[in-house]
Image (cartoon, rainbow, N blue to C red; front, side, top):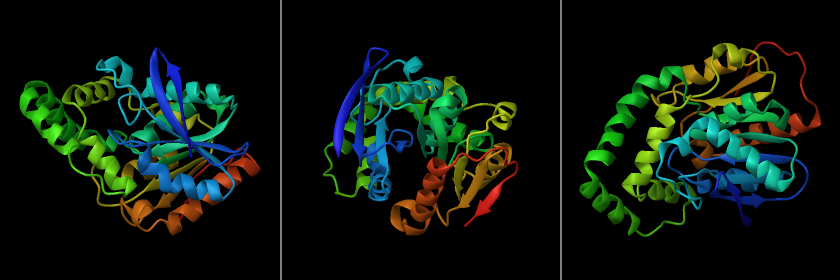
Length: 279
């Protein structure tokens, strides 16, 4: 693993590389998490012959944490992915990630289609998730704003907890250890910006996409994943057995992901309307 940084709009972005070669995949973490949540998948893809780049978006992981909301819009995060590709002198990559990272991948594919070979979108958060997201994140945002002293004590206490060595668990511990002002800026920025391209814009996107969805999670409803797969002309829906399958029992989904990424680099599907449903 190689750790690298690049300057994006005056801020430092951190990213790590796994594997080597011309077939590049860029993965982005979930909200308030970091690159660790995607690291096991990155190692598996690297063993299969791919070069994988894990980016910590601004406000996350090792990257700078600006405390202004405008730095944390999903469209700005998508542009940050292109900054990393330019730094690596990579013309085209598979782009995606989990939750927030799926939104960043989708937005990158919309804004920069010439740079995106395919999209890997795990647990996208779109229209059907909006009510639950508002119920979940607006109180948290208000708590970070109005409950500053208490929130600072709480997050400082979480920061002192020992890390477990499990990369997914430690990524979640890092999320609840952030300074409240950093959390507030990220949440505010994501709420004020677009969630992604709208329905008409998605239907015009020709980039191949693997969309991973699952049941029983109101923040990442299966209806969002299934609808997105129907809207994208080259969308493939892969059904996970649980939100944590890729992190706890990863073999089945990892095999499908590797097959999808291999295919994306072997040949670009052209004019394939409709949804392929696997798993």
